[in-house]
Length: 360
Image 1: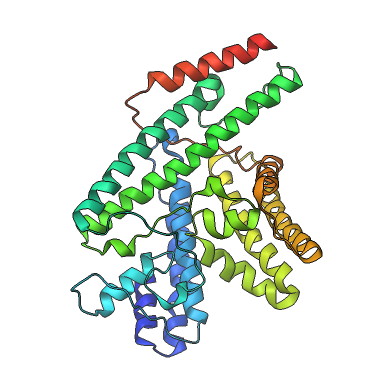
Image 2: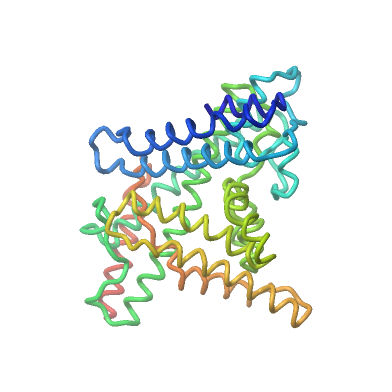
């Protein structure tokens, strides 16, 4: 049904033909998210639920956006040698979350791409990137689990704060875990994107230009605006802006745009957390992401007062402090992957944890 909405958009049919499929799309997406068991009864595969929920949410929100749009969407980038096709354009519109090659992606930031332009060398580069990030993904995940095997290796999870340790050691330990978890989140997203890139370029013979970089060196961000607006991946930016930013901007201007975008992002992430842990507080992700929004608003106030943009080492300190206070890194990662150097991260993480406990 999302494909039908895409075809309707491509043909620029009357609005009624675009409105009609949306309730059915919503119903089918809801049923797929709630009633279908994708885990096969394996509780360790619970993360599949939140991936499916994210996909279904994006399909519903994007078809809603297409339903309400006044002007048709136009595609200007296709694989080399291919001819225009309504079906392939509709399929690309359904799966192209950043709008690469479409007229609606003008406001989306695409990182400068330094990868090879030749198809063969491009595939080789992405293949090496996938292997590299797979190793890092497994190593970071195993390192986190090694800090507390009795809590971090079970689906119910546990806190990163050990109440048996003195406050200083307790928070040093939690900070180390959050940094490793941040690396884990980054590498797993990059790994999945590399795999998707290989499928698109090798299997479906897409042009490498249709797969720009996912990240723009997020560790170089020197402000919250720089991090969320450019450095971090922009896959769901359009969805969050369309559902939250644009409506609230009508009533509250720039402040409403920022708060609304992060509000929808917080709701989506909170639903994901609740799918993994039904005992989690309903406010946990809402508070975290709204704190990011308030941080960006404060950066705007600082710029208006001083005439300077937030940046440099001060901006980096603000980012780290904002993430720590918002609890952005304290998420459960149940992804389990093969790691060819399994013993190394487990050994050093266990040794570091043992040393911290001895210091207590």
